[in-house]
Image (cartoon, rainbow, N blue to C red):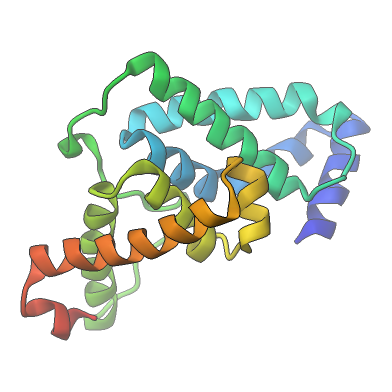
Amino acid sequence: MEDQDRQLIERIRAGDRGAFRQLVDRHKDVSLSLAFSILKDRDGAEEVLQEVFLRVFEKLGSFRFRSSFRTWLYRIVVNTSYNALKTRKKYLPLEDFCLHTPVGARPADGPQSLQEEEQKKYITEAMKRLKPDEALVLRLFYLCDMRIKEIKKITGFGTAKIKVDLHRGRTNLQHQLKMMLGDELKNLL
């Protein structure tokens, strides 16, 4: 993955604008998910993403590969999202969120895909009810498959806070799912 990012960055630096589109496509879904976990608003997260990729394009020439591109990018996403949140000073209603399906993704047919869609729907709804830091750390750890050390670089949080947010996030997510589903939880998961 990092080799592909490095090759794309080298092509971008050589003037290949199509390579930037490929780089954006590789990272936009997870970046959007991270921004949403902080902002709790899809439109706001999409606006942040536009700003993020504009910054990335402007600053890519100074990127030196001291960390992975993914770590550098997600740090920009997190910082830009928190800055946007500060300017708003409040969360938007939970009803403003619609489930995100990645561009080009097609739902599979049959009962298995319906069950997976239901699971996604409930988990997404439960994630919206978590504190922003907990949701962010859970997404980085599970969705992005990042280690605590990488999460620390991206968020600026200490190791202890990350571990506490992971623990509390899992506990709160489980609690939210139990409240939403009750006995259905056993059948769904």
